[in-house]
Image (cartoon, rainbow, N blue to C red):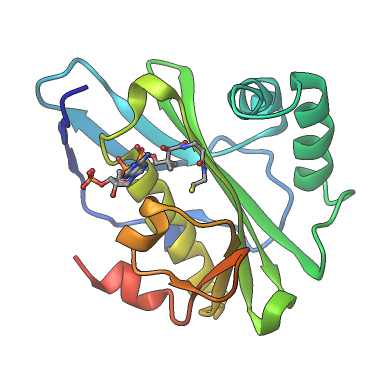
Length: 188
Ligand SMILES: CC(C)(COP(=O)(O)OP(=O)(O)OC[C@H]1O[C@@H](n2cnc3c(N)ncnc32)[C@H](O)[C@@H]1OP(=O)(O)O)[C@@H](O)C(=O)NCCC(=O)NCCS
């Protein structure tokens, strides 16, 4: 698949005014608007609502487990009924859509795990949308959400070239960490 950075980020004006401190997500909140240049995509970013859960479950289930499993996990997470270890209540899911089709999402929450202040819970981009910077945009939106809540030391379970590219460091065999997620946002 050709790498195709095919949109311009409109002014990152934004998350500050749009993101709510509460974990309840009931509004469709448009975060960034990307303008397609040459690949026919119109990727938009917004906060997830409960109506997104079936699509998010479908995306997760392409990697592991069943859609039913992920509907339970994601709805429990979003409704603050299921909690990752040492999670605090504030949490967020952002989705990326292409012409109303959900193509990617990221989830994160405040946390005390591993002496961190936040945790990246899930990030997934549908296969045919990879390599276009969608995960990077979602990661930066989540980073801004953390920064607004003064959460700078962020951990993520797992490893991989995507996290390495964005300067996460290996904490141990299972975890990577951003000592200061502000660097990720300031690196542009
Ligand atoms: C990891 C993932 C979220 C990246 O999404 P994406 O939208 O393709 O990511 P971006 O386009 O923003 O960034 C791509 C970068 O990630 C890195 N990357 C991601 N997957 C990679 C892979 N399989 N091999 C090598 N590099 C990879 C590369 O550094 C690439 O940089 P480049 O564009 O300069 O080559 C996506 O591949 C995915 O959903 N994977 C399955 C779920 C998963 O593994 N989630 C946990 C992340 S480890």
